[in-house]
Each structure stands twice: as C-alpha cells, then as structure tokens.
Length: 555
Figure 1 (cartoon, rainbow, N blue to C red):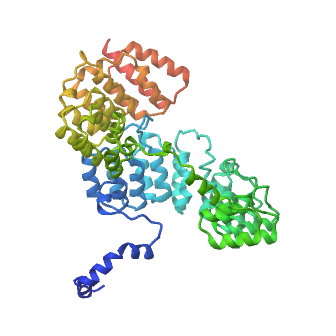
Figure 2: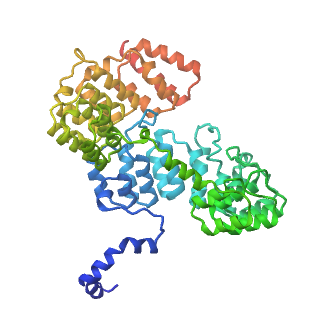
Figure 3: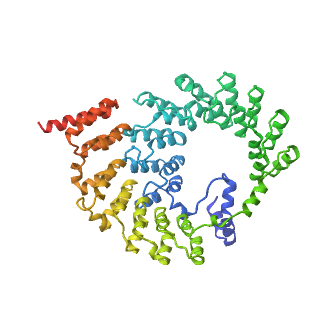
C-alpha cells in the first residue's frame, strides 16, 4: 500500500475504528482459523509466545527475572518453528551450562534436536549438534523425525552423525516409529527409497502403511502396494485392519483403495468414527459397499459434533438410537451440593471473581495449602487480593512455594509487602527445581537464607547436594564460591557420580571431578565398581586420568 493512501485510511476515525473492531475476524479469514491469537499483555507473559513470534528483546527482559523452566520446551519449539536462528542461539546459551541428566525440571536436549529435525532447518540441526556435542545427543531419535522436515540433506547429515558415533541404538518406541514411517507420513517416496538403500535394517520395524494413512497420502499407499510392502500394523494401534485405521483417520479414498485390494474391515463399528468426523460421504459409501454399521452411540457421536446433516441421514437410514439427550437431562436433574466449588478450589484455580463471590456469600475461608498453591502457580492477582482481604491466610509457605515456581516477581512482591518471610525450604525448593536466579536472589536478599550456616542448619549443604543432583553447573560454582568448604565435604563419589555415568554425561563427570575433592580411596573403590558394570570408555578414562593425577600429588 502507498504511504499516502495508508495515512488517508488510518487517519479517518470511522474507518480506523471499523478496521480494528474486526481485526481479529479479518485475521481469521486470511489465516488458519484455528491459529491462536494473543493480546500484547499475554505475549509478554509467555516466553513460548515471544520466541514463536521473534520477540527476542522481550524474551531477554522476561528471563532477566523469571525462571527458564515454565514452557521451556515450548519456547525452543516456538523459536525453531518460526525459523528465528538468533532466538535459538540465545536459548542454547541459557541451557548449555545445565547437565542433561534427568532430575525434575531436566532440560530435554534430545527433544530440542528432534524439534529442529522436524520443524527447523539443516543449519539449526548442525548448530544444536555442535553446541550440545557433550550432551551425547540421541541422533537416532532425531533421524526418525528428520523426514518430516522434507529435507533429504538433513536425513543424510543425521545418518552420518549416527554412523560415526559410539551410541548404541535405543529400543524402538512404537509411538515414534522409525524414519521410514516419517517419510511415509510426509508423502515422500524418494526418501523411502533412499532409506531403503542406506538404512535397510530399520525397515523391518516400519509401519509405513499406517503412517501414509495418517498423512492422507493415497499415492504412498499405492506405491507400497505396488512394491508388495508387508501389511504391518503398529502394535500401538487398537485396530486389527489398515482399512479400519483409514476410516478412523477420515481417509475415504484410501479406504476405497484398500477395500478394492481385499484389505477389509474387522468387527469394529466403523460408522461411529465416520459420524464423529461428520463425513456423510463415507457413511453412504460404507452402507452401499460394506456390511459395516454403527453401534448404539453412532448418533450420539454425530450430535456431539453438531453434525446436523449426518444426524438426519443416520435417523433416516439406520435404526441405532440416540442417548445423548437422556444422559444430559439426567445429569442436570441429579446435580448435588457435592459438586459445588470451594473457595480453596477457586484460589488454586486463580479465579478471582469466584473467590470474591464465595468470600461475600459463605463463611468458608481458603486453606493454607490453597494459598501455597496460588503462590506456586504464580497467581499474583489472587495473592494480592488475599493480602488485602484475608491477610492472615498468607504464611511463610507463600515465599517457599514461590521459590519452587522460580518467579522472582512474586518473591520480590512478598518480600516488599509481607513480613512472614520464608524458611530454609525456599532455598531447597529453588535448587531442587533448578532455579538458579531465584536461588541467588534468596541468598542475596533474605536474611533467613544468607545467615544459614552448616553448624546450625543443614539446608545449605543439602541445597549444594541437590545442585549436584540437578546437574546445574552454574549453580554448583556459585555455591562453591559462597561456601568453598563444600568441596571437601562430599565423601561418597558413588552417591553423585553413578547417576551421571549411567546417563553417559561426560561433561558433568569431568566438571564434578574438577570441582569436588572426593577422597582418593573412595574414588578408587568407585572405579572398581564401574569397571565391573561395563560403562562406556570415555567417562571411565576421565576417572582413570583423574585418579592418576591425584595419586601423583601424594607421591
């Protein structure tokens, strides 16, 4: 649009109001109607929305005083899906110091790579593989997803990474399938042919027919029939026949193809699925060409989906009854007081209007546990209202729970407006759930935490041990800086190292051996135990070198 015409339209008050009144409706017409829309106030509260819309500066501001963990996987997914490389780099830098070993809020490094393989670019996949090289990424899992990107070069790259690493192949997940299945689901026959030539072993466990049906790719099903691909059905499917599955997936043309190739139905009442889809053409075809009928819920399915034309057709052509109205009436007539919502439920759910109504009309007051949940779930508006109207309902549990959530904004508000403070549990919660910035804030701002000594409270030393268990290297270094004596107080290497050996976390093993002064005799005993358990060569050599270095210091 030319600038003068643009200004002429938008400087017209009537046109301006009219356009913006219907901007949401216009957006729904010109884009996918199912796409979710956000107000700006919602955007800046949700990191995954910021990442998914390339608001990098706003994302950095958000993470300056919020935990990275809520929606972390979704935030990576948003950055990858919108192809924002700078946002991806920023997020990678945030999580790189954290161990890959599972513990509560673990970083799903493999999921990040898989997401890039499915939705991102080859450049993104290469970057993640390089930056997370020490995380022992599961290249096989990523290779399964790669065909969904439509990029054959990405498949070749991950295949090469897998062939050149020392990973053993993990057991097949029938939900994830194999790379052949993803190629079939994407409808890419040339990928299937490349995989057949280069990864033939995976083919034995593939269920390409089912994947092609899910993707609605008639040409792939025809191709598989032409090359006499075995008719395998995934064990995760509840259907005995590929024909059944094509009806379930609402793929009428594929169902016809399978039917004409004598791949027929089982005893499942498939009309129930067609009614649920609202597919009247499928219903008519099944009635004319098969013996398939529906169960006594076939009309219920049509009614629940508001498929009026299907409902009329079923009524005229089938004898199955509809129970939907009777069930709905019974529920309305038989409600009891046991279903009434309590004020504690409203506090936990963050519904302030219901809280106000219940407060005005009932004598019940929220429990301490409900208030604790509100703080943990970051219902700031509820906490503020409780502070003004039921001040005695807030205890030290609020700050302790806020630390578990990792939201510094909530902690600062409680710090400035309430006098209860917190307990040592706040520090333990922050460390347990990997909230590094929260832990630092507590140490720097709350006297209950900063004054903790090992001599009078075990919370700090327990917190350090938890930081090792969580695998957060920055947190461990910070606590060692504040309490250097902790490095000499860990007497059992087995307690801390074995978990990282089991997960093949070479990076974390090397870090702990460098930072913690485990007793040499205990390290030697631990070395013997891992030798007998047959752990991989790289982490075992790290321990060999460390013991040799320590032994020379005593000579």
